[in-house]
Amino acid sequence: MRYVTASRTRLLAFVAIALWSPVAAGAATSWSGGASTMQVWTDNVFGTEPSPGDGITDGRGWFAWKPVTAVRLAANGRLLRFRDNPDLDHGYVTVMAEALPSARSAKVRWQAGLASAWRLNGELYEPFDYRDTNAYASARHYLAAGFSAQLRADASWRRYPGQPVEDARRAWLSLRLQRSLPTRTSLTLSLRQGWKAYRDDAQAPAAARELGLQVAQSLSSRLALRAWGSLSDLYEHGDSAAQLAAFDNPLLDEFSSDGGRFGGALKLITPWNLTADLSGERARLDYPGRPPTVYDAVTNLFVLDGEELALADGDRRDTVTRARLAIERPGVRLGGRARLDLTAAVEWNDADSNDLYWQWRGWSVQMGASVAF
Image 1 (cartoon, one colour):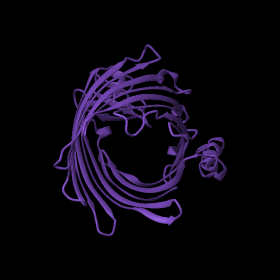
Image 2 (cartoon, one colour; image 1 turned 120 degrees about the vertical axis):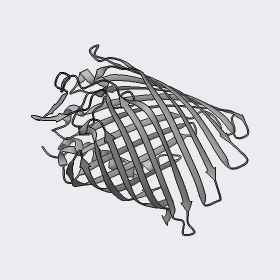
Image 3 (cartoon, one colour; image 1 turned 45 degrees about the vertical axis):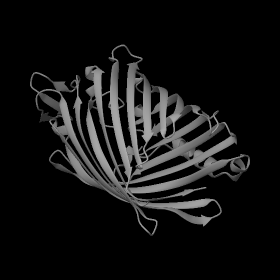
């Protein structure tokens, strides 16, 4: 089958109908919802071979309800369709509950949440279907005027019914310090520590730590600058962290690489209420380990579908450059509570790697609209 199965399409359609249901909305003391669609066109070169252009449609719908002030319930659905490669079609369904017990004036604000998500693929990539359960708790302490500290803990459990060997648990503990200065400057320092463990003992556990810094400067009511940087250290890992798969490899997450990322952005609000955001980022990433099942260390060859590609010595190392220009027209009134946001963007990505398989570059153009209530 080339498209998402009929039963899964019905499930996504059911969620979409629920998001728009006036009965569900009317029963809430406070509610919001919406839908969006984004059309993406890509033109890439992988290695030395041009890749056929692809048209991607990204549709989303969401609904949130607060039956009481301290509780928030939400659901959302997402469906991606690949016009030129329907085997990649997939969808997501997520439900979430959050507790917001603190008053807005409190010096310490507590928050916690529990979410469950499903990823649904077509028949070809059905082994990559997964079920995700996530929980978080955070406390934000306002230490002084313009200065706050936030401590947050996240835990997730992901299960692959078709590939239980990849079932894994992840946990993150993070600290974020934020300072706003009278010069309209905002400073954010973040520290993260993460762990990952697999249900199957054959997979090695992993651990990573990350340091991040962001500086934002408001130059006027219509112009702002932002710069950021982060350094990560994957100090515990196994060779499986670099294992290659043809589609959305679950092993290639924050626990598969380390290195630095640095970037900046310029944001401009025009008199016509158009927002222009020009941003760029450069990352140098190291991927420890080699694919043990497809890489022959003796001949230094990578075998894929009967073809052999020569690789460089040592671990995989990537240098990734990204530039993006986005134009947005937010807040167009449609009547009542309805608002329309229009977005257009163009993005350039260049990934240079010592492994030819991971070397690619290309453009993407995006146009979309979202309606919120």
